[in-house]
Length: 236
Length: 261
Image 1 (spheres, chains in turn cyan, red):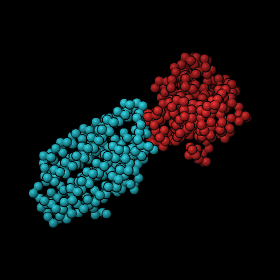
Image 2 (cartoon, chains in turn brown, blue):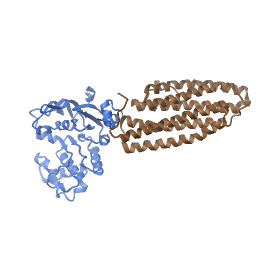
Image 3 (tube, helix red, strand yellow):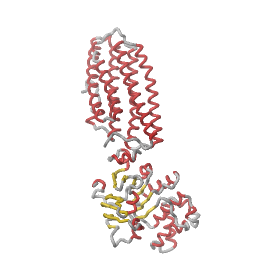
Image 4 (cartoon, chains in turn green, cyan):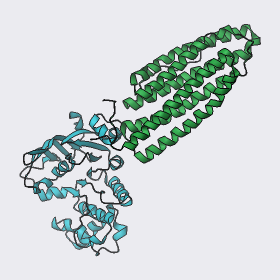
């Protein structure tokens, strides 16, 4: 089936969909920026930036509400079918998922404000690379949405394994470090939660990708393409 | 097109194979094959002029009344070819009843509208049995409670929605096996429409039902199977839930999402 869609006879419907896609792009972009900002705040111990990320999450929450309202209104007024219906359902679910990504970024930023900057923990040196990989995943998921690109959506799900692998490495290193340096347990635990938050953000990016795949293809991504969730390290 | 046809295990009520309809030299239906079973309400959708009504009318030979119309291909009812010379067309139309776009009650009493078919087909040997047929038909058509105290009033004095249910009662009265509905709600308000749709649900299983509708929401609400017609061909036939969420054919998709033409 050709996925480049013609215009609707009722042009106002196209207007609604364009507005909605714009809102999804905005909320996705803001969530990605929040992850980036939170991790930059961590790297540079920048409390002002951390507070900006915490504050910025309100805008993400507001966008989620706006998207939900718009989807419900469009379903009620336009009675969408087929691709249109699937895209609206995907938009509704994606907005909820992105709101969670924003919350995780906010949580990272809040932890930056609590970590004692004097304590340099080498065991967490992989965190910036993990953050990059996670941010890229979020970016790709929204690119897939914007371009209705099912292949990119599949790639996002496959790439999530990289983020999971980072998490498992960081988990092991931090636990070992904390056992040897009990005075770092406070900061180490914050860093561990930050890694876990990034891992969850990666999972949510794959959720977005799965919804994109559903919207484009009309069926769920199969298990093989979806990949496994990160297990708790040590259980694998 | 083979996947449009029922599997060998279920015996369809009606089957059409490579049906073609010509109006003079013009081919209005270009080879349609479909099976209609008792368990599913089938909806025909498609833009004006796509042939859905023309095809519907082949199922009880209503096109016979159009002099220049010619039908090719096989259409069977319980395996019997309805276009064979041995087929009694009057009997056929009793077995395959029809409800039209505009309610068309006879200018007679409510009672006589429903009793008309059973009388001409000799279905009721006496007045008591005829009374029973009229009552049962009106009950099944969901009209009994509204008209039981005024059965001698004229059928044309009823509201549009009531008139359409009277026409359905009239079709039911001769105990048909198949009911064809050609846009039965297009002249009705939303409440009357909902009553007809509810009635279709209740009649499902007792009769094979085929409904032509321009209202896609209606097709989605009342049918289990949907066929999309376009330019005289049946583009896609499948489960209604699939057709409206994930159609296989681009032309179907464009039509149901409002991108057609």
